[in-house]
Image (tube, rainbow, N blue to C red):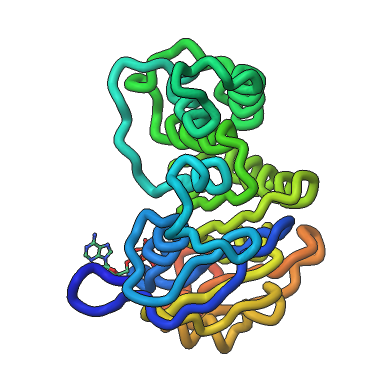
Length: 267
Ligand SMILES: Nc1ncnc2c1ncn2[C@@H]1O[C@H](COP(=O)(O)OP(=O)(O)OP(=O)(O)O)[C@@H](O)[C@H]1O
């Protein structure tokens, strides 16, 4: 996949499985969004194919059929002016509606459930223009959930979210995979989030897939240091029950007393 002059994602082969959360990680510009968009048919492929279900070519599916099976929370999306939160979440039901919008009997319940799962139900009648970045992010997530697809892809979904909603979002992804068998593919920058939520971590570097597997096999100090070009320490966090990934600053902090300086001679 690319943008005219050469491919920015090359020769990547990977599988997102039902009931699993696959985290796509890698440095800025490594091609994560491009890959996600390509898998969702938002980006043309210059070669290869994306297959869904029983090896059906995504390129050959009618748009409505694809939208019933796969949804994407993109990094940014245009926000229409003057519509309510409920209206925005209802967008997600578009592939389920008949021509006269009258056949989506599951729609109202799906919209309400999606708003409750994302914490935007109290905002249902507010206009989207007046929302904060984090609230808006949760509204678009609700719209994706209302679409009720077997495949859910998200591009940096924790952007704009405060700590509580970051944790709730990761919990929700786990719940969708564990309890509903949803196939989740998520681009994440925070490697601790990836360690916490993912069954599989795929690492992209300069458009190539350099590792793909269980977090403990992939999130190693050596690999991450090579890929990100900065010292990275990986330890087991017994409290959270997952890996703890920390970049090592090039200059250790003296101000906070974290760096053992040689004692200064006192007068
Ligand atoms: N619309 C575009 N037109 C031209 N080049 C693009 C476009 N979008 C992305 N690129 C280029 O493709 C490469 C991969 O970009 P992409 O956004 O997929 O990376 P990413 O890993 O998601 O980055 P980030 O972590 O910064 O979001 C980059 O070199 C980028 O400059």
